[in-house]
Length: 581
Image (cartoon, rainbow, N blue to C red):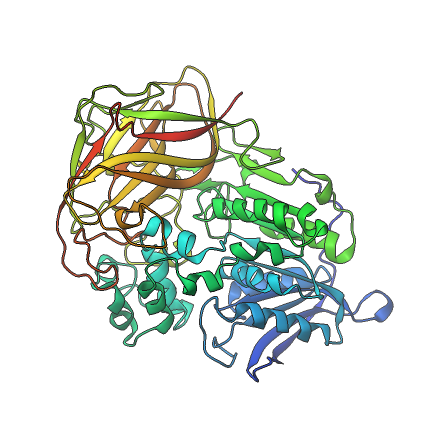
């Protein structure tokens, strides 16, 4: 673990400047609360500054705690309400104004008496969005960034992974961004976070059903059903060649956005605006999900004492170096630090995917009865020959529920009437269902490490004009626990890409290339690899109604009769990034 002896210590008293107004170029005034240390060496009263922008209220308890922690260590901390939220003027439109507003806020900070010439940005989730949005403006005042658990492609990775609607995030986010976070988290669990709320049809009217009025940006998210100019304009992943700043990213193996963060890391290393930016990119991945780590235990697993990371300490090492000039040792370390689950140990790496990766196909097999954990599905490295296909019926009125996994809504969902926990949770309750195909490998004779991006190539036919296929990778313990590792989904109409919709021909075999979340896990000796195939994961993703109607406007449901093929002509398989040991 890193040496923390050189970092700034909490020696300062603090003071607060409440509701300062930063005037934007269009006249809109944004509200900021500023936390400052009292006094300074030499009496200058100037400090390195950290900026956080949020749609969740600048004086939310967690933000105050965060700001006080930093100010005690000698930093000025600016927490600003996004445009149209709480004390800030204007109209809130997620992602749209954050770049220019953030850029102009940096200039506003530069005119304050407590500014010392160095500014860093920090924050997770939406607090990471604003950082990537402002970065292409290349502000002369921005010194370093530290975004956490976030993506840059809001279609592919946020609102439409695999073409399906990331439903709990999208609908609950629209409610929160239009009201107050406490309404969803604590104030109205009988309204939000239950099956009645999530099952509302048509999707386009869920905003009115929830809060009594339409939400324009929610409707934009649903009505722009392909990757078009709307999504392209806000995609920061396509603007990395314009970014000229050192970046330290934090990701989590059970967060949905880890592979997009590695794409951003690779993108900055390859095409960042300057050599300075390209050579100063770092990322670390914790065994956690989207919310702030609370302990070494997540879901059904405890990853051991070294697993827990105080994210503020990591940011402090970064900002002490870039904003205070303290040699914390962080820049002497390799650029990637990952927690390898199973071994439950930290490891440094140089590239992603790892150069020593052996991408290895594992094929699905059965005698036509892979339904449920009691079926005959197997998983091996041997390519299939002449084998019977597997069949199941997907009924959108009875979807496979979300249990654990790579979902990002726990901060909201833990207060729900029907909570959905994220992370490594036993999948056996779902594996008892006949609409879940289960393929299990033999007990391993030695440890096997899987670290990297995951993809499944599935050959399937359906009776429907549109349907979904889902894939999960599971670690089966000798005692029987089936622990979730990674998941993915692909909506049939997007099998040719996200820039157009192409409905299915009933009965025709189609190829589904399904991206799963990245992972790093050692399957220990005696464990088994398992792949699950189904057609729903609800409410993380919306239900495909199987009719081919508009995703936002459809209300009619029908059962889809699904066929999964695994033979010499259609060798369905998952590609695993095996790391030699």
